[in-house]
Image (cartoon, rainbow, N blue to C red; front, top):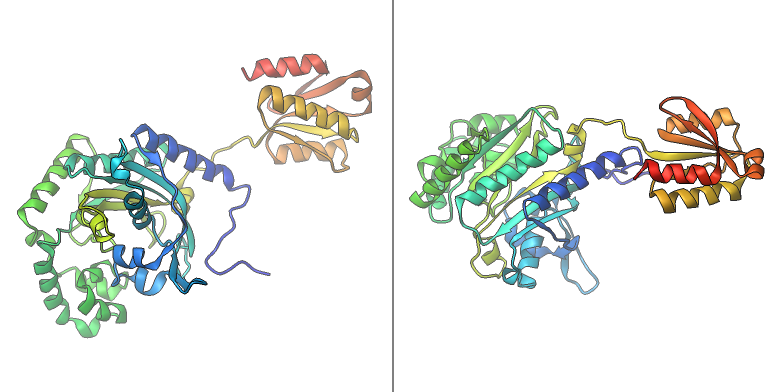
Length: 411
């Protein structure tokens, strides 16, 4: 039996990195005043069709969509923002004293599996509602940078762009359509379809021929309205004053229709074609599109699998105490019980029938900090032999003294 294509088991030796990622994310985001929110994995399909955009690749080709037993179309969430917006509306979160939320969890897209891209993947994301101030755009980029710094991920660049709003974008789309019509025969099949439905998506195409054609396409900066221009210039000014380096990329559009005004991506060259590790932007019309009151919004999402791959491997001690149990099961488990209750440290009791030499090898393999050796003599005399795996020293101790010493060690 094999796992489904595009899905991946996260094995125990990978978990320390994932835990460090999640714990660092929670600590970082909560330090900026974000509160965690958990939304369902399954939502009505209409939430994503209306929010993400019917002309996007996600909605047209990549969603896991099916009819439930009541014949309603439902979808495994392909991204986090639309579900958080739905929760914001349903639960009247505009009445909460805070407007900053974060989430961590799995997403699903039926796309071609490749390095850095799976059909079940995980994201860490943030959303801020009701603050139409360019300073908060700059704060979102600062949160992004702080999170990645705290994870020890380096050699990144931040690209930004102004993609306009519903007032100024139609003129730009018209010019884009005119330009790409001249090159229609050279476009890939997807972009030929995008040409009539949403030519902005062509700028995001990964096909090399389409990318070459797009290089000479009109730039949106020539068409943005004064309001979008002013907002974007203020964001750049704040970023500069915060000493956050960035590059302007006039072809950066993001793959979702709900974005407006300011968008950004954080990119690495270490993962090949899948170089975007974190991206986001402003979505000032999405709450209203999904049935709420007109409310501005901004956020980002980071791909956990890509972050984990970029994080440095640390030598982590998985087990504090390995009890080398020489056929004294009850004595060994009682010692483990005492250690866990009184020191709050991790303890692994060996129950397999192994030689002491084999158990010491296993202790090394699982990176045990200490080995507690217990055999018939130790049980009869109410003692243990404690081996320090860092110094290779060991001593025989009375059990009560041993427990007392270990409690003091971790205080």
